[in-house]
Amino acid sequence: MVSLGLEGKVVLVTGGNRGIGAAIVSKLLELGAKVAYTYRSAPAPDSSALGIQADVTDPVAMEKMAAQVEAELGPVYGVVANAGINRDNFYPKLTTDDWDAVIDTNLKGINNTLKPLIPKMYERKEGAVVCISSISGDRGNIGQTNYAATKAAAIGFTKALALEAARYGVRANAVAPGFIETDMVKAIPDKVKERIIAEIPARRFGQPEEVAWAVAFLLSPTASSYITGEVLRVNGAHHT
Ligand code: NDP
Image (cartoon, rainbow, N blue to C red; front, side, top):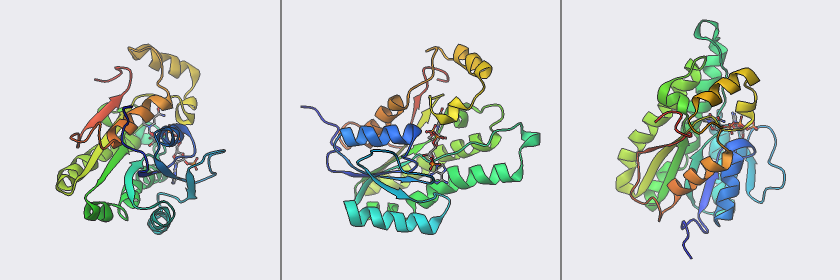
């Protein structure tokens, strides 16, 4: 039987209690990985993965969380930096608080997640990182100057990390989802949703599981072993 080679591998997913993160956690469990996930508010109901409450904006909490994952599950092979928020507004109306909250979560959160783990991955000469970017970081989006800046930064970070990590046998890739049906997209007014769907050649929003498959592929030590520094778009041809 063909496998993605993730059986028994320890993978950490930030923001794994709901939305895209929860779908990634489920997919990795199905593929035999040992999965830990973080959440800020409440754990996922009925998940057999290790759930740890840790805010990605808090470097000390994230360091403690990483130590707990390694103590309970073993050395971390894969990290999915998924936790993210949006605080949308036209730029003139965007407050400094909206700017800071999105930068702190989406960009500093990636650093806080990876900082305690990357040195160990380099030492073990094995590992895979997937950062969740967005179509917004790829082509911009009205009302999302703050969000788009962080999602473009996630791509720059991933590419730079891939260059330095390759010699240590560690890969880094990004996934850039289009509009995916989660709480983040459910919050968009119906009229705007209709307009967006009309722009998408696939004529529908994506499902969280469709992003999860892309992440699983990029984590796979067999299926994507020579792929690093890439951005995989999952967007129904919304932006190519
Ligand atoms: P949701 O709003 O459904 O879920 C967001 C997740 O991030 C939750 O698990 C949430 O935890 C977690 N989170 C937010 N802030 C923090 C924090 N400070 N510390 C820890 N966890 C936090 O979002 P999606 O599932 O839609 O999005 C997941 C990722 O995919 C994000 O990075 C998003 O930007 C990106 N994305 C989403 C798209 C979409 O269309 N949905 C499109 C492109 C990219 P809690 O529930 O505890 O708050």
